[in-house]
Image (tube, rainbow, N blue to C red; front, side, top):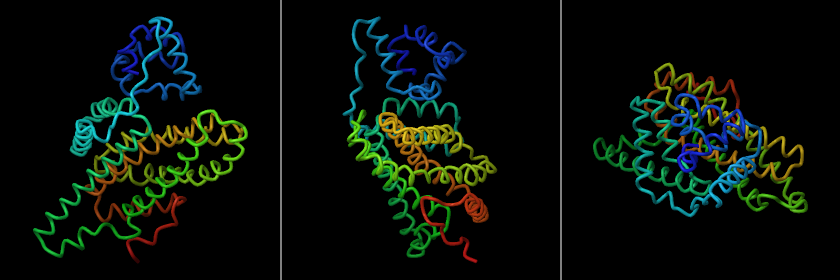
Amino acid sequence: MFSVLEAYPFLEEYLAAYHAAFGRISRPGGRTRWARMTTLGDVAIEMDVTWRRLVRDVSAEVARVTGKEPPVRDAGRAVAGDDRRLAELREIASRLENGGSLLELAARLRDVTAGVDAKEAVALDRALAAAAAEARTAADRSVRTAVGLAADTIMSGPPEGHPLDSLRREGMQVRVLCAGLRAELERLGGSPSRRRWRAGRSLVARLVERLSGVESRIRREQQAWFPALAVLGAEGPAALMRDRQAEAFEALRRLRLALARDDAGSAVENGLRLLDLLGDLAATEEQVLAPIAERSLSFGDWAAVRELEDGVGWSLIAAPPPWPAP
């Protein structure tokens, strides 16, 4: 929203009259804080309209006032190769771990990732994961040099059944399902014909049903991980993730509704939005939630987290073996 208003200031009056959801623009801090943390997609969900419709109407107003259609952002830009952006994202994660201002860092995160499309998000996610893996490898080498073979046991990773191991294995399953659903939705296209939709609908429905297991994953994070970290004052992961988790729940609800109504266009649109949200959450889990939890929680804390996780249940993967071992 901030970028839109910076480029086209006259839209403030238009949007205020367009829908009450845009009324926050005129409130104190609306043009800065709220606009920086909100996308047109976020407002479209609140208005209960499609993102395409909102963008079409806003673009038409820009064209009416300026006499030309608004430019399309270059989707071919290689985000994974943007060293400045990667460095800023790593700095945000580091400052968050060290107790930095949540409001300031959330606003900065929005600025850094503004305009990232689905393909760029995947590239950025991979680049961040590669950077994190490289840092872990370097740290492993340093520890092994210092303390010898004993470090092999220390650095071998959490045992099966440990919440960190379950988070990782479950995350891999989410990525596989997301990749399958994205491929099918992109094959269908934005407005699939009835014939193409009938041929692909059953596969989409099966993938959505399996991917619905993210609901229990998110609830375990909300009911086990976040409270355990909050007791220790580490509330950053929850602050960064809760809104996106709520958006993912809503996108999944709309996707199921579209399938029930046999609405192909809405199913594709909401499916792609769900995948973007899950990709964003996956990156935050890997780059923020897991590292902070690993540094903060004690053995007893992890045991309590695992007990709470079992209370919520498992869907994406089979229930992990007991941990700690009886």
